[in-house]
Image: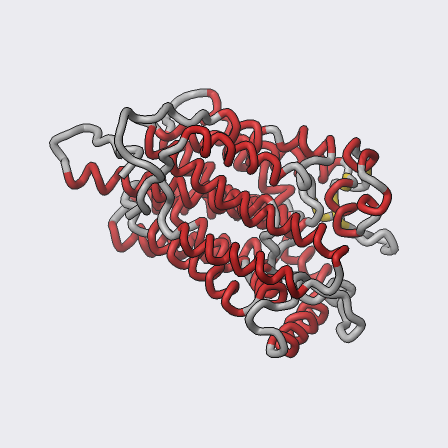
Length: 435
């Protein structure tokens, strides 16, 4: 299923350590406070890449070629940038795309070579706990705004860039400062509340999968306790696409559970739905969403951006325009090519890049769907959730690395399940590090 490993023969290489992933994903509150959460993310990816190269003989996850082709097209689209000054933000977005693949390769190798891979999933669970903690900070202190050390260290020309400033200046929540009765929507550790909602929906299945894989230990009970606590900041984001993507994911999971007669998965879905239903008794989520929609032009603004992308992509279909563009021909303040990863890739990098991007997620969803265990089936809905979010939420951020992390772990877990079915007499069949 996987592509050939890099190198073969000789004694097995040493195990890749999990601690770099723990530092990268588990210390999110620290990276947020220092302002390096965004700008430092590709640097974490570079550290993982150095460890992979030093170790050598690394197995590549399935469909790596699709993402490498996507990266090549994105790199070529830099020739379409309107000005050299756009290279800074272009490079950062490219860094997020490349880091996601590096994270996937690293996690896939770690999960394949360990007898018990559950520890490899711990960094994502720590990432979840950081989301919950900072989400509550956003709820309790929605107007908190801080200047970070990274913001102070950046040269003026770079630090004043609106895109960079959003990433380095701390704000816990999004709200309209001009409104007499603003609606505070949690965002920390991200720059935008939509990214928080996207991350919550993507990591929720990981937490449930971990509690199924690990039946004891303090972390399991902490995660179980965090599930109801996470609902307040998540629901208060008022992110409609978050609810839609998670709803589709649960529906797909429920259909698979019914077809396979998996009672454990079905009961866990019922538990999640009941937990969410109880939360709506205390949080008037429907009224808040309606109030927000009635008091803003978010739907009209998004539609105008999408229509403008479709109008312009015909003039540069192969490599796009290199990056989103600010224009005065739409009702929205945001640049063309934002408000959804689908539109960003199409406008910035062209039709071939979009096809590669979508193909990776579709093949990942189909590959993960072969999972038979309850944890594997929960993890398998993450690429489905991502596909639903793509037209609405951007993913040129840390969430793309989370998606690759989960998919790589899910594929390794599914391979392990298939190997056990092929040799039922053996309690454990190790998966070789190299092919």
